Picture (cartoon, rainbow, N blue to C red):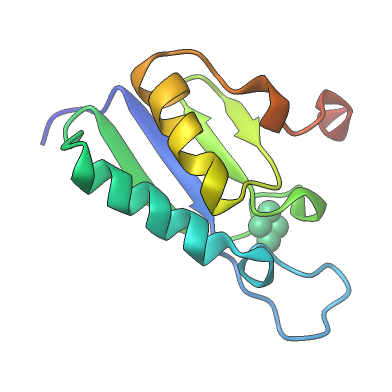
Length: 109
Ligand code: FES
């Protein structure tokens, strides 16, 4: 297996209905994950880009769906399926992160 240049982690954590923190799944994360997976296939980017759905909470739930890209350590929040192609083309392929979708830095303070 080739080592990927970029690895995308999509939080698809699911909490019980009515949980006070909510979760990325109830905010549409599965559709976001599916869109990344579809684009990976369409663009035949295997070997350069890896896409993983993560069933454990990544932390900033209030910004879900949360997507993290390594090795760049870029955290995206409130990602919608219609945002995914821009992230894919601009960041994963082109190396230019999509700043308008960043989780605000103060979240990590
Ligand atoms: S449930 Fe996705 S970041 Fe917490």
